[in-house]
Amino acid sequence: MFYKLNILPIFAFICIFVFFSACGTKKQLAKLPKKEPDKELSMVEKLKIQEYLIDGSKQKMLGNTDKAIAYFTKAVDIDKNCSAALYEIARLTYLYQDINGAIELMEKVVKIDEKNQWYHIFLADLYFKVKRLDEGIRVSEKLVELFPEKTDYKYNLANIYIQHNKNQKALKVLQMIEDEIGVTEVVSLSKSRIYMELDIEDKVYTELNKLINSFPDEYKYQGMLAEYYTTKKKFDKAYNLYQEMLKASPDNGLLHYSFANFYKITGKYEKAYEELKKIMNHYNVDIQTKARIWIQNSSQTWLDETQSEELLAILSKQYPADLTIKTLEADFYLNQGKFEKARTIFLEVLEKDKSSFIVWEQVLNLHMQLNDYKKLLHDSDRALEYFPNQPVLYFFKGIGAYYTEQYALSVKTLEEGLDLFISSKKLEAQFFIFIGEAYNKLKKYEKSNSAFDKALDLEPNNKPILNNYSYYLSLRSDSLNKALGLIQRCVYLEPENPTYLDTYAWVLYKLKRYEEALIHIEKAIRSGGGGNATIVEHFGDILFQNKKQKQALEQWKKSYELDDSNDELKQKIKLKKLLNDAKKSKP
Image 1 (tube, rainbow, N blue to C red):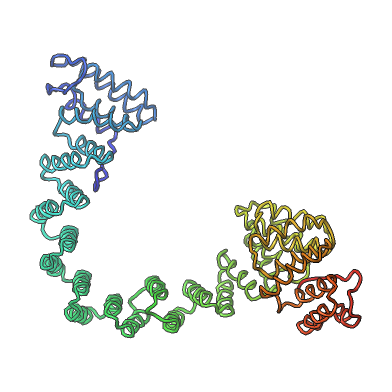
Image 2 (tube, one colour):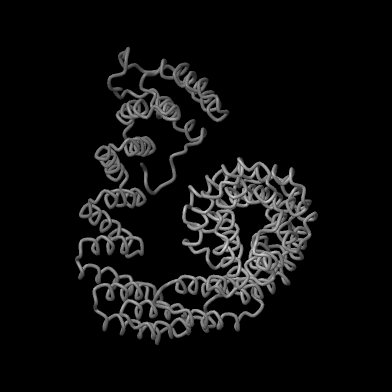
């Protein structure tokens, strides 16, 4: 692989330029089949080769690889030593993914014309592609030997040495470059990194000081030296150097960031925080950099929530109208669980810029998080004006309509959303779930069942669907065997959930399998269901059918203490028996 230079593509006009020098030579081509004795080419033969090379190059540019190879091969038929034609055949062979065939050709080509730099570059690249590292390095070294004036080839060779852990050889080449062109950042930093890896401290100091002395106005080199002092626990030297830098360049706000990192490493977090405050207040640090620094540090454990908020407040005060800072502020409060604050700021952002779908989505999610379904319905409708092809907005609107008891609107909106392409099966299943719920509220039970079935086709192990669908069927005494199968699958997936165990017991109750129902309702109570009025009432009903009337009455009374709004339960307690066709519904 050729690591540094991007010069492998060679245009047709370059090839034409070298045709006369690349063909008709008297050099020996190693191991070529049907090798004929060397001879001088006639002018007619030379012109014919030139014609074939031009035609081959044209076909290659048109993408007609087979025709191109045919023309280049005709040139080789006239002159077995035509390196330009062989080179082009090798490149096309490589395009056919026959790297070994291309290498074999190029090895012959460089023997024909070892002075052509492009041939060596291509051969080295091929060697590196097939991990023949020693041969790739040998060819790269040959390039430097043949073209000592080409500094780029030396850079490339040094990089190759570095990547293959030949550090001493790399240092030798880098020094050669420095001797030729003087001190440069690339060379000195490369050398310093090698010395760091070899843990030769004095050499690292030499290289970094060399950069500092050569480029005194570039404070980054002093920063690098201070950082190296820090890694070597020479904290006094690092501190003094940072102080010198701040005195010499008080307008360089980013020096405070280097100082902050120094204090973090040395465990002086309060001082690190003070340096960050200086950065946030600094007039010479742009807003994007300040925002990036805040993001990098606000998630770190050394900075507490209050400090992160104070830094953000500085930015907010400095840039009160900047939407980037507003969004950072909102995200911060969102991550802290301060949903009201986050929503307020996101809404401020929307008032200034309604073009961000992500911000709309955050606002709608927060409405849901805060159970503010009226605003969810209102703002999802507004969002659809700007993004009518976003399915999730129809979902938000459908949810808002459902929880504000506008069930017909919920169904209509959700079905409109389903007409759009929904890439997520999970989201599509949610559409069907709420369509099923809304139709259930509208007492359109066949459509409700159909929607739940479609949801289960998409997510067969969705426990809330399995539970709710089963429970709705049991309430209507509809398809009880199906209801039993659904809830059995649900309980298998989560066997200790009191809500699911209650539904299981209730389906068995409806099937008049009272003893089995009692086993599962008792398990629901033991699993934490004793605080749910509906589960406790079901416990009483099941006890009653198991001829345990006294215990049933006790459970009904407990249920009434948990929820005294249940008039049917109050009547059962008064009569001390079940009511005929009493309707149950879970809160």
